[in-house]
Image 1 (cartoon, rainbow, N blue to C red):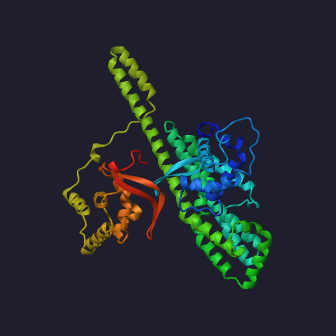
Image 2: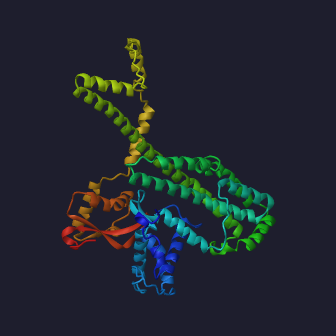
Image 3: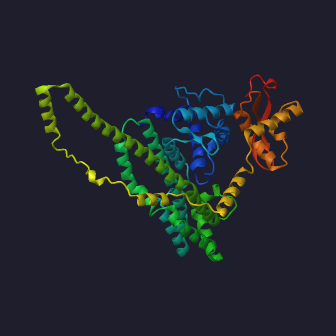
Length: 480
């Protein structure tokens, strides 16, 4: 089943003439997305992906000789001189063969890129083969906390390196859980016609063995403060103990020279451990809870629909029996009813007692009205609500006002206007510039056109793409 659907030609990029270049790009991409120095604050857009792979392609394109493989692929026939074309072709190949996938970034309203679950696992293997050190076998939050305590008590650098390994694996475990639930949701949506009983049972078994511990005993939020305290105590050690740590780390953690700057190894390890734990608490752990919640809601909805369909089928069987009995007459009807009665003799029918239905008294109705009466709103509550509305509307501009403003500027200047040329003297000016493109494209005014420029807009308030606003009769007949 691995070579079905989007993974039908999964290993094709690794079987071509430029396979070594593909492996180098996969290692670089994994290092950026899931390595020790990964930035989890924003998703990877296409421009960022090209900027990330371009240095690897430029550095290796002339140093890697193409192997004499008879098979041809879309990368083998490209010219080495055009590194941009090769980078674009590499991205297309990784997308087509199931290494990468796109998803909607709701925060930035853009299309972002990430590894598929299979792509991430194999990219991690390729990345790990190029690492200069091995990983510890344990990977939970308590191990990180215990290793920090042992390092502080025993002044042992090996415990500190173990704590660093555990801190890295905290995010890896959480990311693996997020990918697992996202894969379950994708399968639910693609196979919604089949009730996912088997997958749900497997999930319950894995939840009992793994996720239950991850959300309770190994909950990163539970041990977060203890890890902070241990890191603070290590930073406040006497200078002779810090020097002992540093001397040991120079021998056993030489691999840090490739990843750190000029800081001491001891301080760099403590900072990285704290950063990994904070990222796990603020980003990855809530993401895991959200992914699990989405899967549970989707699975519960599908199971509920299946139960409703089953209930409807049973009620439909009774309707068909009644309809069939109505079409029969005499002995045939009697014989059918006798057979039907013998089949449902195990059923038990209970009727409601009419005496159980009583009207409420007048006092009970008055009590219910009293309970459901709307509370009186105090003056302070009204004042606070008015203040909140005023604060929310203080810097809110309508798209029509922005469109009217830019139309006035275009008529005044009698030529196209760039966003970077608009004044930025007040907060309203800044908000108008930030909302300009959206307002022009969302308006019903078909005489305006917003064209993206290759240059960037830089000012004291924000940085973004520069646009040219113009009347359509003045613009290029084929606007971008």
